[in-house]
Length: 171
Image 1 (spheres, rainbow, N blue to C red):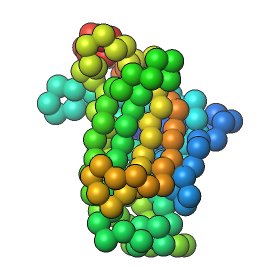
Image 2: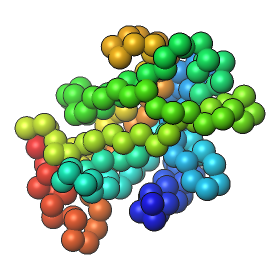
Image 3: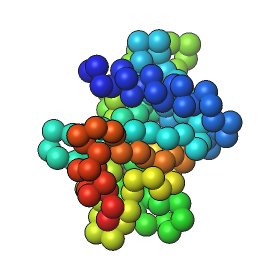
Image 4: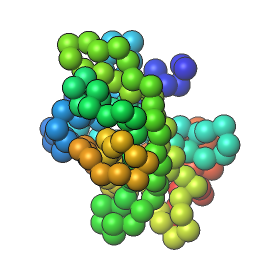
């Protein structure tokens, strides 16, 4: 939990420094949640990856959307795809039906979603590369729907985890 707060605080600081806004779908936003609430992330943000319990590295994020959009689905799934911007190569793909918060000001926020980035698929370098995350709201695991995108650059953590990260995320 402490690591999540540190990363979220870093994301907020980095977001404030970035001027480019992400591409939003109708009533959807990609960001980070801390005790202060949801903070939207801007395109171009650097995000430090976190080591996971099964030996990989990931980032954590949240999706915020209008209550009306969330309520328009009998079952709400958030499908996530991450691709390298320069090559279009698929790095990560997942889908979940996350719990959503109670509405506040007409908005609901997803539980924290992990986006696993490393170990990277063979031959695809991930760390220090510009990636694009697309989140699609849908009523089936492979359906289409409104989407939001965010361009970001994942960074390896410092310290003991850095050399492991570089080996795992270099493709």
